[in-house]
Image 1 (cartoon, rainbow, N blue to C red):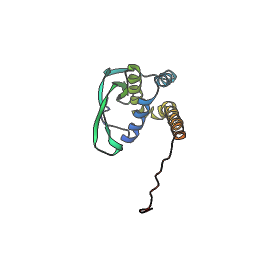
Image 2 (image 1 turned 90 degrees about the vertical axis):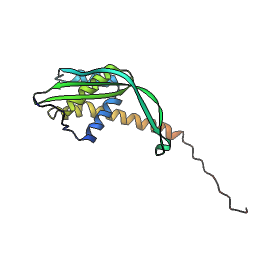
Image 3 (image 1 turned 30 degrees about the vertical axis):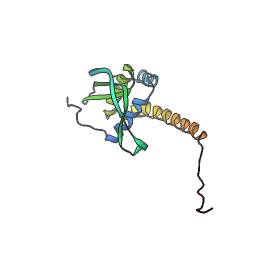
Image 4 (image 1 turned 120 degrees about the vertical axis):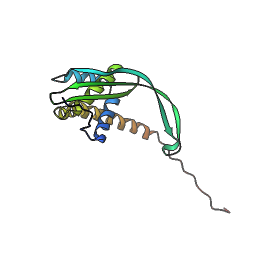
Length: 159
């Protein structure tokens, strides 16, 4: 059986769905997992483990980089055997939720399988991404409602 080390998804496409899986609520992933008609068996390449990662920032978004601090992150790697090939799914999620990391890794593997990609994209990624975007828009509207515009009048010299 061929190994899935060669990527079949475009990097930007995979980055998008991995971001959605990482930001998804665990309950959404659990419901999507239970809703699958055929739940594949999987094995752990790397069991979920929690640790710290260094978070870096930039002053003003474009300035010099600085170490902001550390955050807790959980990672996981699973192998899913498909009829065509062996697929390895990865996940990195903020926090300590081991099950979230495990489910995100399994869905990453399923999304790399051409036979299941469209099904998982429509049943899992699309709805979760829609909810995340709606929450982002709602939060942006709340923030915009409190925005205050300040301006400064510059006096002419000698006035």
